Image (cartoon, rainbow, N blue to C red; front, top):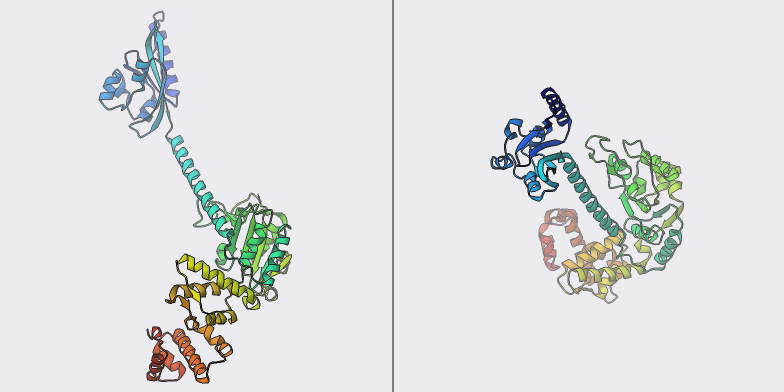
Length: 468
């Protein structure tokens, strides 16, 4: 709008045309009102963003525009009332979010014009919301990672009862300060992971993450992406956000590879390279990522046989086995058996709000058992006895048949008669067979007796729970 009485009509028209061109070239919405709140002019952006036509708003007062529902809120009215610039957020009929700033222009002390500038912030707000969602997810993942790390490091069941374990723990604490690779060997269930945690918690990396991967529990085709991560779209079904690998997560901490002998040869080569130069590449990525972690491995496999069978690289083996630690099985450290039984009995009594105890004859059987499953088996059996035995005292007859069957001949009391020993042995065989063959018919067939004889013996020994 051009007001100049000294201009010719032609000059005025030229100025108005130029003004319209300038208005329409602005990506922001421009809406001009007079001092009474009447709509004088809008630009093209106003039509697009606010979803209104020029004809629908021009030469109408702001009151009329509000009444017709073209606007649901007016910043112009606020300016006319307050006589100063005002900024508000609005939602338009075109479902756009806009930031509106209205500025008054005065003439002779009165508001002569009100110019409204609106900027479409729909996409900006969308990005902001997406970033807030990402931030929320990151916070959630960070909390989950903290819990994961805490759960990984917590070792309330690590018990030192024997001289062998005491010396292993002392060795673990000594080597903790030397940032080198460690290979922990021993049968399944002997406590290899617990020793790894001792090393981590005694090292300078104790404030960093402790990340574990069971190499034997993940399909071969997934191990690489688990360890190294991948970029977005690296392969079919890959996450759009990509994924951080466990090696990256272990940065400034410890990476524990359990069952390391199960790693495919191709991964052994890549991991060997990482250990040499401290750099990884995500799957589908070209950017090197520096990592600083300590590798501790564990296995119950015969790695030397795997080398001969060409399932384990010899150079990889020597890189892992800088400091070897061997954990003997539970049968070779009897003092730990006593300590562990006491510990787990107390633990499960507390968990289940019970007060069960083992009778001396039951303890003798447990102490003498060879525990092929080591600590894991011991924990399982103690919990089972606490939960399933109804009496407060757990007797020898309550123990699993395999324990009684293995030890019956050597642990029978000297006061037992031959008949008592034979009966006890026969009862154990019947219980073991019923468990193994899951039924009376198959049990009778495999024991070489008829069903009536089997039923008579079951009744004699009161083996009712096994009848199904």
